[in-house]
Length: 285
Image (cartoon, rainbow, N blue to C red):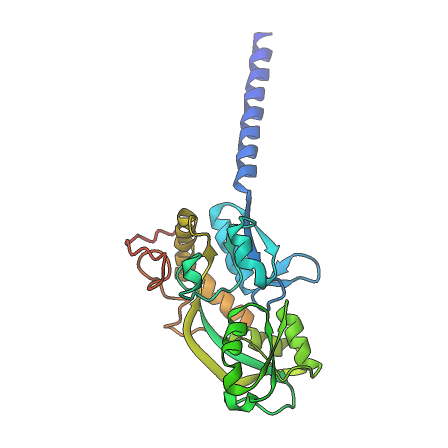
């Protein structure tokens, strides 16, 4: 009788331990809420079967996995993505966000992970764009509110072009195919991917180097999370995960000096507000 009681007690203890472990596992899979303008290929795109995929999703999922969390992507139009971050709708912007002096005043950034280059997409058979002069008096389509919109708008008086704005870059590209715009201006990764997928468009031979980079963005008061994510990203640079994502989605192998390989000292974007120069050791398990 006593033996049976002990056996039942032991089984109950084991069952309780399993429940504790299960609870711990459930906690480990809490959501890491990030924002992206879904449809901005090849960075963040909707899957035909549901969910999202893309270059930045591969990186975001790798970050979440190392944090013991599950990535949850909030689809947010670009024009409202920064306001949503500061309103705490999500904790990080995983969409490709160029680090600028103006943006660094209202957000924290990690160090860069991709170079930011500008390129145009034009309709196949249309005159190639080899210089900005080729676009004088033409119509440019852009994703409303992003850096390409700002760049094109600032140069509107100089080149006499008209800027046509869309909530989604996919719609901006559709305007080129329909003949409503001469060219869509976006990042070189976007232009290359779009042309690869659609035989009706081609990328311009003109690529504009900005000297800027993309970084993950956080609220100004979220220093701990920014530092944690940056440390993980440095490990993803060391093990080749970020470089592999770039090659997978663009078909191009990044050069040896590309920012996908570069680990900067301190935390944040060097030379911008929010940068912490304090050295830290990169430990990758």
